[in-house]
Amino acid sequence: MAGGGEYGDDSKCQAALREAFGDSSDSESDAPAGVSPRAGRGRWRWEAVAGIRGLWLCAAFLSADEQARLLAAIQQEGWFMDENNQAMRFGDLPSWAVELSTLIHEAICVGDVNVGVGAEMTNEDEDACPLPSDLLWREPFFDQMIGNRYKPGYLRPC
Image 1 (cartoon, rainbow, N blue to C red):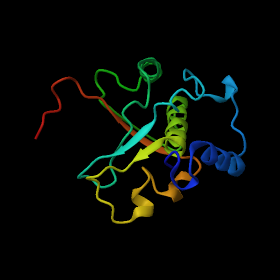
Image 2 (image 1 turned 180 degrees about the vertical axis):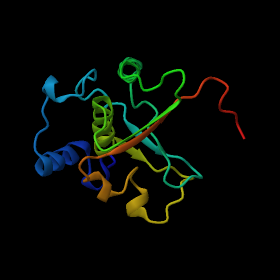
Image 3 (image 1 turned 90 degrees about the vertical axis):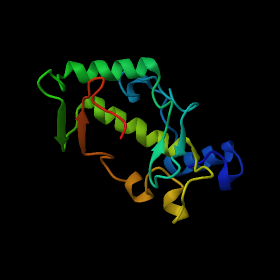
Image 4 (image 1 turned 135 degrees about the vertical axis):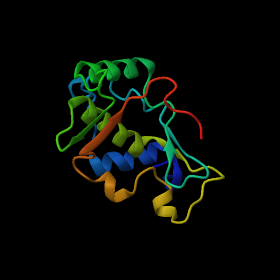
Protein backbone atom coordinates (compact mmCIF):
# COMPACT_ATOMS: atom_id res chain seq x y z
CA MET A 1 0.00 0.00 0.00
CA ALA A 2 1.49 3.28 -0.97
CA GLY A 3 1.38 6.08 1.55
CA GLY A 4 -1.26 8.47 0.29
CA GLY A 5 -2.64 7.09 -2.96
CA GLU A 6 -6.42 7.06 -3.25
CA TYR A 7 -6.88 8.15 0.35
CA GLY A 8 -5.38 11.58 -0.34
CA ASP A 9 -2.76 11.75 2.40
CA ASP A 10 -0.97 9.62 5.00
CA SER A 11 -3.23 10.64 7.89
CA LYS A 12 -6.37 9.52 6.04
CA CYS A 13 -4.64 6.27 5.04
CA GLN A 14 -3.52 5.62 8.63
CA ALA A 15 -7.02 6.40 9.91
CA ALA A 16 -8.49 3.89 7.45
CA LEU A 17 -5.98 1.24 8.56
CA ARG A 18 -6.76 1.97 12.22
CA GLU A 19 -10.48 1.69 11.52
CA ALA A 20 -10.03 -1.63 9.71
CA PHE A 21 -7.47 -3.26 12.00
CA GLY A 22 -7.61 -1.35 15.28
CA ASP A 23 -4.78 0.43 17.04
CA SER A 24 -1.42 -1.28 16.99
CA SER A 25 0.35 -1.74 20.28
CA ASP A 26 3.44 0.25 21.16
CA SER A 27 4.39 -2.36 23.73
CA GLU A 28 7.96 -3.61 23.60
CA SER A 29 6.61 -7.11 24.29
CA ASP A 30 4.75 -7.09 20.98
CA ALA A 31 7.83 -6.21 18.96
CA PRO A 32 10.06 -8.96 17.56
CA ALA A 33 13.05 -9.69 19.77
CA GLY A 34 15.93 -7.40 19.00
CA VAL A 35 13.87 -5.07 16.87
CA SER A 36 12.49 -1.83 18.21
CA PRO A 37 8.78 -1.19 17.60
CA ARG A 38 8.16 0.57 14.30
CA ALA A 39 11.90 0.48 13.65
CA GLY A 40 11.56 0.44 9.88
CA ARG A 41 8.38 2.37 9.18
CA GLY A 42 10.22 5.54 8.28
CA ARG A 43 12.58 3.78 5.90
CA TRP A 44 10.56 0.95 4.30
CA ARG A 45 10.26 1.63 0.58
CA TRP A 46 9.53 -1.16 -1.88
CA GLU A 47 10.88 -0.74 -5.41
CA ALA A 48 9.77 -2.92 -8.31
CA VAL A 49 12.83 -4.23 -10.15
CA ALA A 50 12.57 -3.25 -13.81
CA GLY A 51 12.76 -6.15 -16.23
CA ILE A 52 11.86 -8.88 -13.69
CA ARG A 53 8.11 -9.03 -13.10
CA GLY A 54 7.27 -9.79 -9.47
CA LEU A 55 10.73 -9.00 -8.04
CA TRP A 56 10.73 -6.26 -5.39
CA LEU A 57 13.50 -4.70 -3.34
CA CYS A 58 13.23 -3.08 0.08
CA ALA A 59 16.82 -1.85 0.32
CA ALA A 60 16.84 -0.52 3.90
CA PHE A 61 14.66 -3.26 5.37
CA LEU A 62 16.84 -3.97 8.43
CA SER A 63 19.30 -1.62 10.11
CA ALA A 64 22.89 -2.80 10.61
CA ASP A 65 22.09 -3.52 14.27
CA GLU A 66 18.99 -5.54 13.33
CA GLN A 67 21.03 -7.47 10.76
CA ALA A 68 23.67 -8.30 13.38
CA ARG A 69 21.03 -9.54 15.85
CA LEU A 70 19.36 -11.64 13.17
CA LEU A 71 22.67 -13.19 12.13
CA ALA A 72 23.53 -13.94 15.78
CA ALA A 73 20.16 -15.70 16.27
CA ILE A 74 20.71 -17.80 13.13
CA GLN A 75 24.25 -18.72 14.19
CA GLN A 76 23.12 -19.53 17.73
CA GLU A 77 20.75 -22.15 16.35
CA GLY A 78 23.62 -23.72 14.39
CA TRP A 79 21.92 -23.51 11.04
CA PHE A 80 25.12 -23.33 9.06
CA MET A 81 27.97 -25.48 10.26
CA ASP A 82 31.15 -25.78 8.20
CA GLU A 83 29.96 -29.07 6.68
CA ASN A 84 26.46 -27.81 5.90
CA ASN A 85 25.73 -24.87 3.61
CA GLN A 86 21.95 -25.07 3.41
CA ALA A 87 18.98 -25.72 5.67
CA MET A 88 15.27 -26.24 5.09
CA ARG A 89 12.36 -25.92 7.46
CA PHE A 90 8.65 -26.68 6.95
CA GLY A 91 5.80 -26.00 9.36
CA ASP A 92 6.95 -24.38 12.60
CA LEU A 93 9.69 -21.90 11.81
CA PRO A 94 12.38 -20.75 14.26
CA SER A 95 11.41 -17.70 16.33
CA TRP A 96 13.78 -15.41 14.42
CA ALA A 97 12.13 -16.43 11.12
CA VAL A 98 8.63 -15.81 12.53
CA GLU A 99 9.78 -12.37 13.74
CA LEU A 100 11.30 -11.63 10.33
CA SER A 101 8.06 -12.77 8.69
CA THR A 102 6.10 -10.37 10.89
CA LEU A 103 8.37 -7.50 9.85
CA ILE A 104 8.04 -8.40 6.16
CA HIS A 105 4.26 -8.43 6.49
CA GLU A 106 4.24 -5.06 8.25
CA ALA A 107 6.67 -3.56 5.74
CA ILE A 108 4.46 -4.65 2.85
CA CYS A 109 1.29 -3.33 4.51
CA VAL A 110 2.60 0.06 5.68
CA GLY A 111 5.70 0.73 3.57
CA ASP A 112 5.78 2.95 0.52
CA VAL A 113 5.56 1.24 -2.86
CA ASN A 114 7.23 2.53 -6.01
CA VAL A 115 6.34 0.53 -9.09
CA GLY A 116 8.80 2.54 -11.18
CA VAL A 117 8.75 3.62 -14.78
CA GLY A 118 10.39 0.56 -16.31
CA ALA A 119 8.37 -2.03 -14.39
CA GLU A 120 6.09 -4.19 -16.50
CA MET A 121 2.52 -4.16 -15.19
CA THR A 122 0.16 -6.67 -16.77
CA ASN A 123 -2.34 -6.78 -13.89
CA GLU A 124 -2.26 -3.49 -11.99
CA ASP A 125 -4.05 -4.91 -8.93
CA GLU A 126 -1.44 -7.67 -8.52
CA ASP A 127 1.61 -5.80 -9.77
CA ALA A 128 1.18 -2.73 -7.54
CA CYS A 129 2.14 -4.64 -4.36
CA PRO A 130 5.12 -6.88 -3.51
CA LEU A 131 2.74 -9.79 -2.70
CA PRO A 132 -0.75 -10.65 -3.94
CA SER A 133 -3.46 -9.57 -1.50
CA ASP A 134 -4.65 -13.14 -0.88
CA LEU A 135 -1.21 -13.99 0.56
CA LEU A 136 -1.27 -11.02 2.92
CA TRP A 137 -4.17 -12.59 4.84
CA ARG A 138 -2.52 -16.00 5.21
CA GLU A 139 -1.78 -17.22 8.73
CA PRO A 140 0.98 -18.04 9.33
CA PHE A 141 2.37 -15.63 6.78
CA PHE A 142 5.23 -18.01 5.91
CA ASP A 143 5.36 -21.70 6.83
CA GLN A 144 8.50 -22.84 5.05
CA MET A 145 11.97 -21.56 4.33
CA ILE A 146 15.26 -22.46 2.71
CA GLY A 147 18.51 -20.92 3.86
CA ASN A 148 21.74 -21.09 1.86
CA ARG A 149 25.21 -19.98 2.88
CA TYR A 150 27.73 -18.94 0.29
CA LYS A 151 31.39 -18.24 0.90
CA PRO A 152 33.04 -15.31 -0.87
CA GLY A 153 33.75 -16.27 -4.47
CA TYR A 154 31.04 -18.98 -4.68
CA LEU A 155 28.75 -16.76 -6.68
CA ARG A 156 30.08 -15.42 -9.92
CA PRO A 157 28.24 -13.32 -12.50
CA CYS A 158 27.03 -15.28 -15.52
